[in-house]
Length: 85
Image (cartoon, rainbow, N blue to C red; front, top):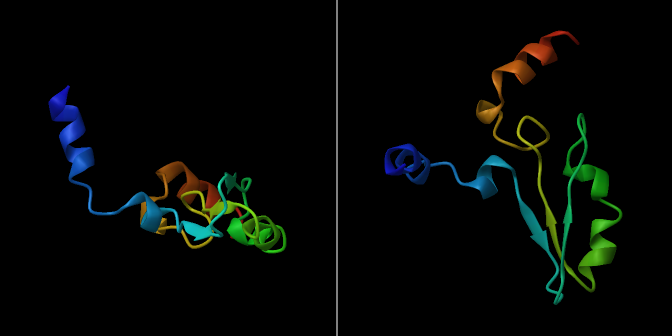
């Protein structure tokens, strides 16, 4: 089992960078906003600041969306994207 986990620990790209994670607010409770397929975290641009007044808000982009690291995009998503060109 250790041999399977070791490469994951050595990965140089953090989740925060890979998924373009943004943290807003400092409230005692945390709210995580996740977008749907074909969107990115900007869909929460009007709602997130309101929640950030009283909560800690976490926004992120799913891999292959918005400001995420596109090199982490699964091959099937890259193939699917070519259908719209």
